[in-house]
Image (cartoon, rainbow, N blue to C red; front, side, top):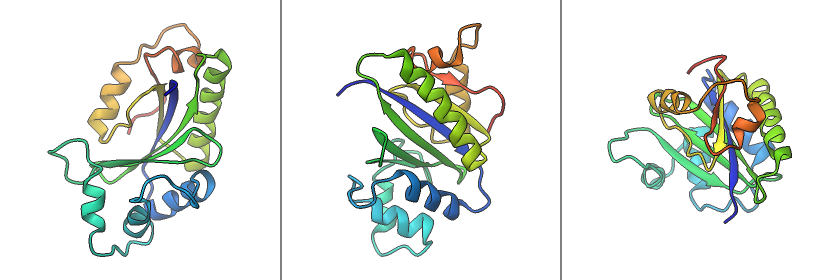
Length: 174
């Protein structure tokens, strides 16, 4: 599998269902989402009417055994490599899109920076984060840890996004 630049934004939406519905409508290939738990996600988070077994299906998406609420689901995207939806431990959303970058093309770094800015504006996100093969943070402490692990220096934001080190947007914190 070629490298992918993952771009995430942290959403503290008062209306989590509406924010996720908008993200799904705009970015997810709903005709072929790529994960059978997609319908459970929609019923639980968007419709807020879970069917029997939905909570268990989403619990399978937790990567941390101590997690109570957090999970991430990787879906097929309409025009990006992938769409990633994370419900955080605090009940927020981390929404992400992956950009295929098999050649470590500098143009992809610029695209990632632009995409982050667009997502932040579209969803009124409080912060953004990008990196190569970067797992989505599932809690505020994980987000802060990812930010601390990303150097902030005189290099361009775009080049940091694809350097393998990741990139944090220091303008705000979840």
